[in-house]
Length: 231
Ligand code: ATP
Image 1 (cartoon, helix red, strand yellow):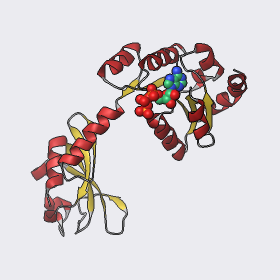
Image 2 (cartoon, helix red, strand yellow):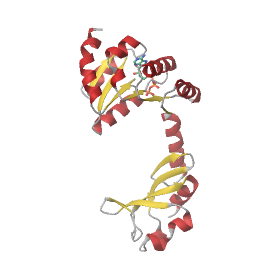
Image 3 (cartoon, protein in one colour):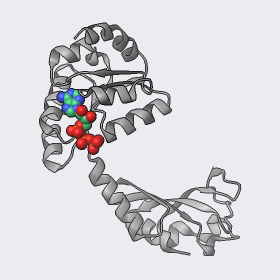
Image 4 (tube, helix red, strand yellow):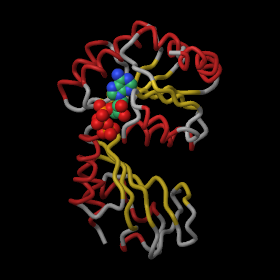
């Protein structure tokens, strides 16, 4: 408990900056926290397991061992001062729901929570959690599209609408995008391209693609997938 008490001041300082608290530092929480750190966001990491906390010590702005299902602990950590908190506890559904409920009581403006399945997600949504994510389901779907098609990368923006990264098909080599009439004939938009110099650029009407160029294509899922099959 002394640790939580002494931590309160630090947590408050972190909370003032552009910062995020991540509760639960399993594979998902850790990867999320490290990515946030990498992009310059301060992160307070919280986990009940001392070994997990030790392993991440120094990698996050602050890491504390604490049980997030206790209101007094969350208050000591000044979690209510954070604008964004992520509940990354998955398999312990009770702990996930209890934590989310306490964060709502603390009026955290934006709460993200990971759900392991639809039922878990439905409860979190009913509680009022603002953003519920399904990392395993989403990744499974994403990989399915990669396995199915020829895309180098794939991201579904919303149901039925996606972005893919793929090789510029031959029919576009040496002509402008306007001449290629991709929108009219394939119902997709080429948003950007990477030339042989390795630089990404926004695609323009007069962009001319060549052998080895990579394109970022946006449009309805079926159409972008079909486009990614073209060679
Ligand atoms: P992942 O798939 O991301 O590895 P998971 O879905 O298996 O994680 P859990 O094992 O439930 O998720 O939890 C992830 C982390 O959350 C663990 O490191 C665990 O110690 C921590 N955790 C679980 N309950 C609590 C709690 N009440 N307070 C703080 N941390 C907790």
